[in-house]
Image (cartoon, one colour):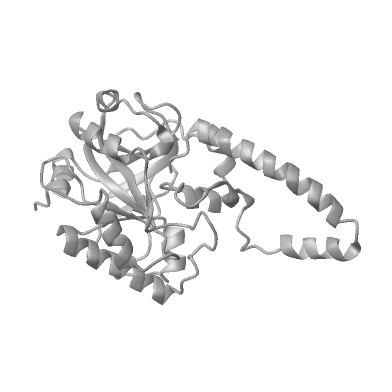
Length: 302
């Protein structure tokens, strides 16, 4: 995910402000037994979305935001870290506007070979840093790509694939451009599976995939977690032969793979890394293969 330390402070401030209002109102409500009983019933239940969900507004999501909130980590990401980082192999990052200004020459000099950056979300949000990051990464020699934060609750998959392809998600064979990514994960704004059944979610993903391929000729990369995929698609195997897998699992050793995928192509192994050229936290990723294989993915060659 893409929380920076400044974002973490921002979230704490917002939660503290909301918390003060909540305490004042809640104290009044609890003056009656019936209100107290009602409050207890609302607070119960293992499927409740963590309170931190209220700290993001539509358009503010980023890769891993839903996962962090699902794990109850959103307010503490600034202090989380995996040490030592797994810096072997072909290293990459993912970014959005939360990273602010990035020195891409420094990023490349620090050994980062690839980066995906947020382009769009849903059907109406464009990342404010994308138009700067995308050409700047290319100019620094970083193999770059774009990602779309999925909102299956606001439109069908085809509509969002078209929006993505028209606003940064297109592809060209220039030796430095990766296929686009469908970031589909725990909903940071509400219900985990966006209110869709497993059948509806499969249809949504398939429609996004087919539309994106018709627009770009490329198979979209799918970013997800094993937990979300297995729950919200019902252990679906329908994408295993179509889409490369970018798995998020913030751990050491090896990641847990969603059902149906034979292996991972990219692994997001921490949500709290650091890199020269970027202030604050940044996700760290690695590619499952050599740089030649990464270029093959970029250029769509065997």
